[in-house]
Length: 468
Image 1 (cartoon, rainbow, N blue to C red):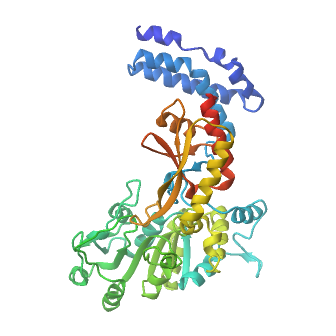
Image 2 (image 1 turned 60 degrees about the vertical axis):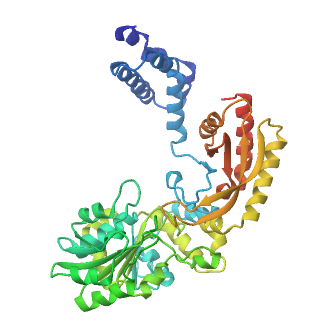
Image 3 (image 1 turned 45 degrees about the vertical axis):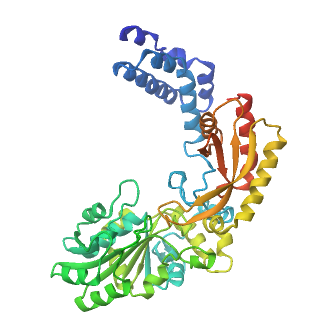
């Protein structure tokens, strides 16, 4: 069949508009918007024909065009950003939104946001205030820093600090710390964007204090240390200690900036994890400015946090770039609520979901798996289910070598393949993201909330029945 014949098979806009499945949206969506969605889908079809895509594919797309438009309108009216059930066992899953907030924190944030707030109004004097003051005292109390600033993510925090203190000057970094932080964002490129000139010292696996000493010149402004939070170099290794860099910086009248990546505020060794440097550790060692993420091990909303000496933070606050990188009331409200949980070290692991997932024992996870298994079996599903050992991970570029023993539900699907079930679970409402291993679906219970069990069980039953 030639292209002209294929073009003629594409349905007309008015025919699609009058389709019952599409026309029903007219009650809630303006006609012009529905027509725009239809035309966009038809343009996509014409583009496929222009590209010479196989006729069988074109026919399938034409036959399913009404369903595709209906799905687009459903997403548009109900929201593209959806609740997802995370059955992967990856706690800080970047693709699934990283850290989650507790219901209690959400309620606090909601009650603040549905009313006017004192975002930039100083209630004590009845005049304009600073949004940064809302969380600064809390952050300083928890980290030991003199001052603090919050921007929209940690990459922004690094760019801002280098822009202000090292633009057009040299910043010395170990070759072993030139990390890529995900999504192809690399420290060298981030530094270039700030205007700082990167000076690499040492080798990938060994960098000594003398390497920094020999690289210092009249153009040097900053010694930078980057915590390799998303990978480890093992074996024949050496790196300069933070205290050594601080001593060198004092002698040479330089600054020391450290990018910690994942923000850790508590000692994780108390929970039998490997040591991970805390923000307070870095401040106590004399680091001038420390940057870290709010939405990783800290367990808060996406943001970048800069802590350190007041004289430097004050300079950051005055820079015009800070306004472009500032956070809104949503982020500040959530961040403040999260930080308040850290005021009590005895209960923080229970009140921050990321920490709770990390510290829940494998025996407790096994009990969760048993409850889900019994619920699935109570629906008389035909798929085989059993509880199997699993391994959870931190994710989000945090503690890559640390694994957490866990348990999962292994589901051997009835009459369909594991890949087919994985796809149908992923396209379920709500979507359920799982792992596939040895022709079985694995749902790691460490990252699943108990209120989601019923949705999982019903989804499996619906898939077996062939419902869509």
